[in-house]
Image (cartoon, rainbow, N blue to C red; front, top):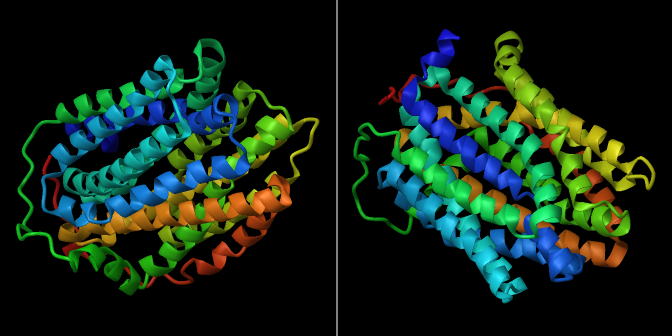
Length: 411
């Protein structure tokens, strides 16, 4: 308990802001695919395009923003990105109310939100590294991970119920408001933030600096490849699961949300257990074990039965989520420990841009594949490929933390 209090009131404001926006995000989980399928009557290829084009273009837009963030104080950037996401998302219920909502608008909003997501993530990582003592980074990341899974458990079923009871854009409106509240929470953090040491103007070579650092780093390079392939295949099949469950198998929106929400309680447990696992078995062993176990579940989703399908999906998702909830905070902490202070934002931005691009590319490819083979076969092929991702995990921990790469807390 003393360790929790040592993170301080400024971290609690940041954590509260994260909790509000995370809950809003997961309240709106699947809202765009459901709007496309049930309101705009889009097919699997169009739904996959919606999931792919927005993040892809958003990632392209965000490329110069990572180095730009390194030259700025991070808290104003976080507030600005929250406000951008609020404005973009609130346009959807407004257009729906006026009867002018279109597939093109959903695409445009997804582009803006994706770019703002990447920029927010890069700035928040740099801000957290300056806010929390180095020895508490794993605790802080574990709290964010636990909060995310709690929001994931509560948000989707409530969002599905809101979709059914109050209309198809209710959860989108709630998500928009959550970003406004997050901006207010981040503003309340207060305190001083030192001006970045890098004050030179943005140069073209800065755009690739984050990728150069990751690809030259012996520990981050294999993890980077693992994350790109794993996340791309997992998220690339998400629209196909929506089509399979909502169209082919007749799941209702609330059942669809519930199928992914209940297993997230396992994610809460896994993220809370992570610091103890690392203390007992070591960071590298936990990272490799969790990274291997999380690859074993996607293939099973190709075999969702017509009877008992809801329980089946919950059981499979539970295994996937528990292993991911252990892997993610360990990876996030290790990555922050390895990044020099003046490269945190641009490197995290490069990582996020690459992840978004991978997800977008594989989502588009799997949408085409599903149009040819059907959703089950496409999900099954992705599940087989995911089984190979543990081969990209680092076999040895060759990169101990360097004290010179950490900074003291400014809180």
